[in-house]
Length: 244
Image (cartoon, rainbow, N blue to C red; front, side):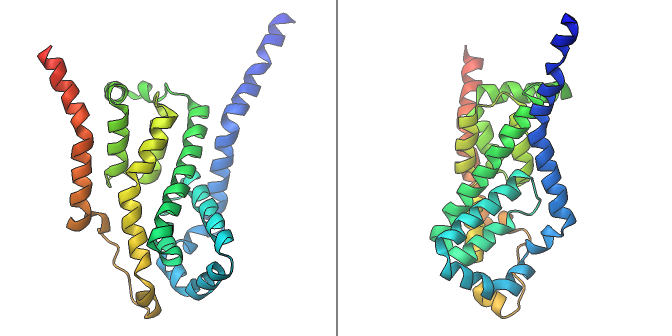
């Protein structure tokens, strides 16, 4: 009887760990099944621009709160293309208000996902993937802020992937939040700027060229500069170790 009593809590523990993840997966499936992605594109913005503008004008605070909530939820459930909402933010709220709204919403959603993934899988799963992951984890522990900041800055890595990977390692939550806030500023500013300036284009029914946006020289060069700056602590530590 004593052995049976001790074995009871295990399923409850697993349920507690995976229940939030199950909610996220279910929400993602429901969003896709209901055709959610068709509302997150420029065609949807073009077709509903007058209604959205009027709603924001009449319910400004509610619109900001609702937008942050929707954006954070879509980031938390890892909907690809949620970044299009950054363009929506620029169109609806302008550059000055839209940029911090996007940064706050994206950080909230990413933080929720971080906590859910860590709760479900812990921090040891990535190490089991092989020696490369172990090497990455070692470098991450030595230069956590720099590594996380670089992951956020490099436009090759999809936002939802960068949200999922760090929780699998022993990353401090405060460093994750800080590097998310700082690392998404350049990309957020670019997409919000696009949204802020496309009103006339949308009204005329023209297409907005977004292909390769983050790789244009005026965008990528400053980002590369930030990446190089964030690599200085990593390089310095490696040089210091060789000189010892």
